[in-house]
Length: 306
Image 1: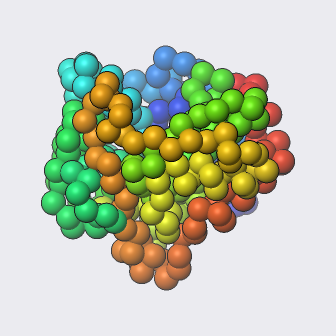
Image 2: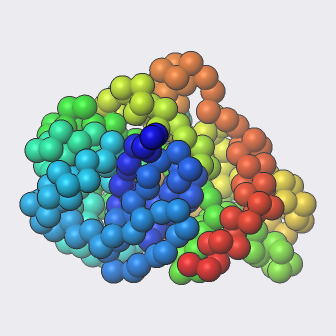
Image 3: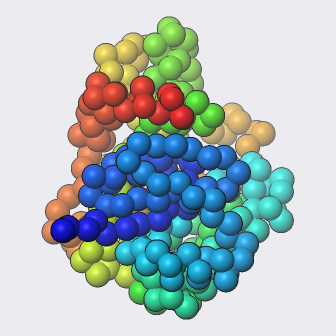
């Protein structure tokens, strides 16, 4: 009898983990590791998963023997990280250290989800070997987590990314915000001078599993093929969903004096990943088309029930 390989994903009630679980639940036995909020998802297990105790994590890994430990939990709100640095350090560094220690002890393959907020933003399409120069607490804590995981788990797969996908009732995504506004005929402004390389969560998850199954280790940028501004992303999203792009207006980030300092160009090069896998990851249009099809196939309705 065929038995699916098992994976556990921390941050189990978050946008990334839930979309990841839905994308992979037919291929793997997926467990979502929860903290405070509990989510029930068809075809997916949910467990309370405290990461404050290395021993508790070790016990779980020894008992369940997952093929991959995907550490997706984190404090990603840049403003909150800056105003509460101790909390940012606890969530992004200390808990990641506990996970890395437990994976090292049990020999479990670790996939650490990192960020594209690690550089100054002076250059476009940063590579995995570029020197880190985080501008804020969020970036600094993620950089520290990367460093520890690399040292403790040499075979860990560390993924730098910036993703989009369908959000939840309690946490809307960037693409949700745009779609909802345009569907309600509301005008919005988007940054014309902030650049990134977004990737759909389904594509992200598929790519990471391909890397892990191929034995990849170390740092990989898993992002889309296209460097794009937040403004252009909005325009392309509007056109894909047959919404009015004229409701979107450009805004310069220099006009927003209340924001924590952050890189204006967060774009990452995915050349290393593409070369390793022998294929392109996908441009914006192709991934937005998948996002559109996900809604048509009922994904949004399923998420609305959570």
